[in-house]
Amino acid sequence: MIGPARSKSFRVLDSAKGCDFLIGTGPKAPTRARELGVPLVWDGEEQMPEIAVWGGSPQGLTLALASREADPRLVAVAHPDFEEGSDHQARFPDPVGQLVVVDGTYGGQRLAEAASPNEFAAALAIGADRRVTVVDHGAFMSGIALAAAVEIADDNPKAVWDDALPYLRAATLMGLVMAED
Amino acid sequence: MTSCHVGDGRRLPTVKRFSPLLILAAAAAVLAMLWRGEDEALPTETWEPVDPS
Image (cartoon, rainbow over all chains, first blue to last red; front, side):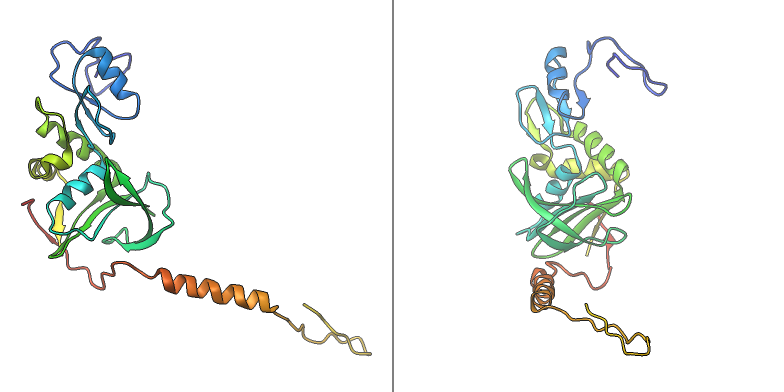
């Protein structure tokens, strides 16, 4: 962990010297990475010069799911941290259930979002042949969606959905369960 | 809403009158709910774990 900070779980360092990548969340992380001169693995949706991998988030995870499906008709994610939708309804797997979603974009990709009514989050992609989903505790999904992005970080900047298969494999190895219907 | 009283002081049941506007608004709300519908209904939960591929 790069200071200034205090942590009982992690060693706090003054600089990023010797680090190959930084892992950061939130809008201030790219600026911090630029200052430290280390490429960033980020949960944001924008491409910037200092970003090695972007989209390490439940939204990016959902787009990675959808990128593996033929002709995805519905790409949606529900999370307890999201705002309530207002456009149309979508049915997520239990225990999230049917929710009103808002149509939008994430990283230039079409994505519907909804506020989960409980602590669970669900990523859902409905393609021509099957439905695929990931359902887990919202905070856990957010953490794994970012951590798995480290797996695909290299010299070529990319979004997680650009390298979806190794990203999804890393996410499932880290504990997320993918299911199909 | 109106209420009427007879001469001996007994109170008659309240008569509720719904304005045509209220009825129209209720009908519009029902139609809107039906029109929005559900994009993807999953009548049964038959999810099976799968590896990314």
